[in-house]
Image (cartoon, rainbow, N blue to C red; front, side, top):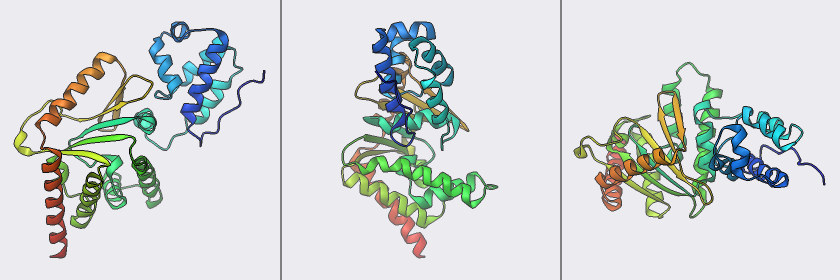
Length: 279
């Protein structure tokens, strides 16, 4: 029997690597828990690697090659896949997002990346990275827009976003840019492609007031939560922690306007920006 072939990083690399891991593990006659034991990880963690919802770290790849006798296959491909267009703290979250069946996100300050337009992303990166060259800015914008192509699919993933009212009122890039991005979000909502709610200022304090929260669920793997701060982020896979964050999201959504009321507010604010630009 021939050994596994090196993977092409351009074709769903993490999912393919996970499939090869499952194949190699079963060939050795090991369960997920048995493979996880010498790595000091749970069987569910191995399941997440095989399902492609978690990134395989180099330290695990080296040990897996030794345990499964795969001739350095996982180490080679893990090194190849380490070259990412995303910041280190967001790499795993971006890759999990790409294979998620459903994404629920609370955004307290900015339009979520999946919903941004080119002009909005450009304005954000130019202000956030004032010393970067235009080439670097364009590369960042392109990566951001590529993530948004997940919504080109008619039904999956399900995206449910709760936007703080501050997201609508913070003028990123000027009135024209804000009008465009809010009209884009409203169009997706009217097409029933996304669920969007607005958490109004009148809601006051809430459980997620201090930061953003993204929850991702999958067809054949446990859910993940991603929490992001200034230049940092953390992917949570502990079931108890994910359950707490899931409760937080639902409590925030319960305090938000209904989808119909939210859509009316988004379109009203977009119209205000349009009139401001015309003036």
